[in-house]
Image 1: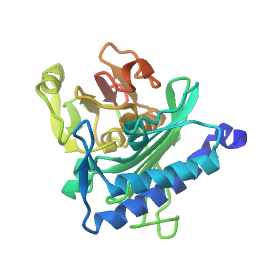
Image 2: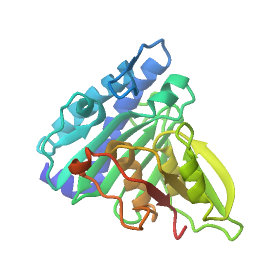
Image 3: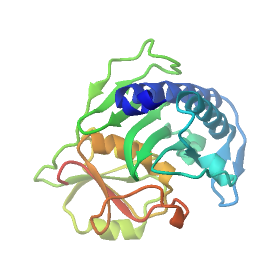
Image 4: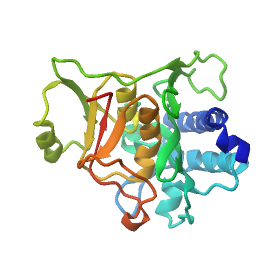
Length: 270
């Protein structure tokens, strides 16, 4: 376990394999009929969420048994472990509404947090055949993944990605497809905006990381498991995620119930 955690490339490779298995299970549900249940907070959940979570938790227990895991569905049931300076954050199916609406914009999110910073992360969009992963400065990658892949067979080679500096003609802004609000629009009045894009789930972080967008502001409520993996990818690609006052977005905020304040994800110098 210690060698895996200290070798970030090996850790991310293991997280990629776990995410692939979870994504394949999600796609099995995606192509069939499924029941939607609403949790106490009115958010939807499906068997795909729960099956993917079981796969991820099993994989992390085998790969890093001493590292606590905070995962969305387990947390919704009141199962939040004691977390120290190092823990995993997992959203087994980020964008359940996108999954239900069958627009493909949902992801599997797995991140490692150390000293409140996301230091490694994997974001897998199985319906888009896109996987993003990152660790440390400059180690951000995207890979085309074969449909329903459970391994690397048929998948393309990873390509390095980097956040871009915005052009003088204005910013490409990406925002939530289902949670855009007036406060976000008011914030964007501070910027020269060239184009608006909409996307669901952690794809927004990843599209800033690839240079397809420059800025992702979020005023609406998010939880730490919604953001950690995409945050890790964006940091590795040279971007940043800060609160409105410019301080870094941190993790392990148990005093807030692990929810996030307003944040802004930026590409290079956006």
